[in-house]
Image (cartoon, rainbow, N blue to C red):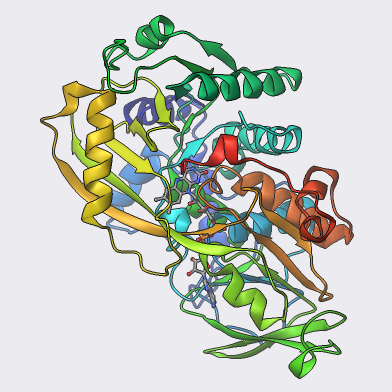
Length: 473
Ligand SMILES: Cc1cc2nc3c(=O)[nH]c(=O)nc-3n(C[C@H](O)[C@H](O)[C@H](O)COP(=O)(O)OP(=O)(O)OC[C@H]3O[C@@H](n4cnc5c(N)ncnc54)[C@H](O)[C@@H]3O)c2cc1C
């Protein structure tokens, strides 16, 4: 159900009433609640959580009922088969695919705050697969495929809008990188090509393509399958789906330490060690497998297991304007000016830039960012000079030296990582979850993530994606 605006999504839902699936959903919902009101597990491989529908909304309104909880609130138990630290899109997708693809449901997702409170609820929701390395292209392309079927898979409208993605080049060298990317993309059947300034103008009439501009546009990499998605719907969709299959989500549950045995470091941590569980602010929980899905906090968690990661944490800021009539049909990115912009279905312009140039755990916005952003955006689109910024915010990004993630096993047995997502990890959530679940279930590294193993830094086999990922999105 790609390409739907909010209004279209609503109409689509109404059309689906012909099939009138919601009564089944309501029945499921009632049947799945015991006398205490706590939901019993109804999930099994292949089944889906009930669909939301307009009829259900009206029926509940008339009966004065509120919606049931999206996921259960259950007591934290003392042992699980798998503990996932971090309730963002990566942790939740991993839990969801563990349950749906592999039948592993004795899983707890622990988050120190609330689900989606990290980068997953703060990003600008751009998805694309036009990366620079063959490994990156194959990986992100699989994610885009999962995003395309997500509304049906999770039974929740994630509002994927496949509106096209333009990366502008302002110099000959930038244009060379665009050609390079286009060739790598085409070899892997990705719809991606270099277009000239006039074609750019045809796609986005509001862009200033004049040769008198301070940084004239020399051309662009055009990637029609790219677009934007509703990030909170994705997070809630995965949480709801995982819950349906019996996975537990525990919010306000902070991991304070990772318990290991047999390792060469202090307290049995480090190389050669084995994970036995975690220590949390709500007590100790044992598990033979602990997965680090904490993005901006990744090194703090891996340090707890005695595993050093080549990651620095840097804030990334974004901002949004008041809503105006829709005029921006594609996502526009300028690597040279370090800005990007898209327009939401509601009409707001969403802006982003590159990470702040220092390590920090602060998520406050800065005036510096707004000034730089406004200057560059006005160079590209002088027509938006009267628009007002409504708000700005920041999130934490876990930056690796080669702009590619760190995924899979570590020198500590049972401790796995799905981190290093920098400024580009939201689009990777589905495929990362799918591949990490396979890694855990089979205890083997799937081919699609082989290149992203932690060992590549020792072996000197970096997967350089800076040319396609230096601007956050
Ligand atoms: C402003 C901004 C714009 C972005 N734009 C894009 C974009 O357009 N496209 C794109 O693909 N990516 C984008 N990103 C990057 C993307 O948001 C992240 O890479 C992605 O969301 C990471 O997801 P995650 O699930 O790995 O981590 P997160 O969503 O950050 O979740 C990590 C979770 O771990 C929890 N946690 C941390 N420490 C502990 C602990 N000790 N115990 C328990 N829980 C803990 C946190 O509370 C948090 O909820 C952007 C990021 C930002 C900040």
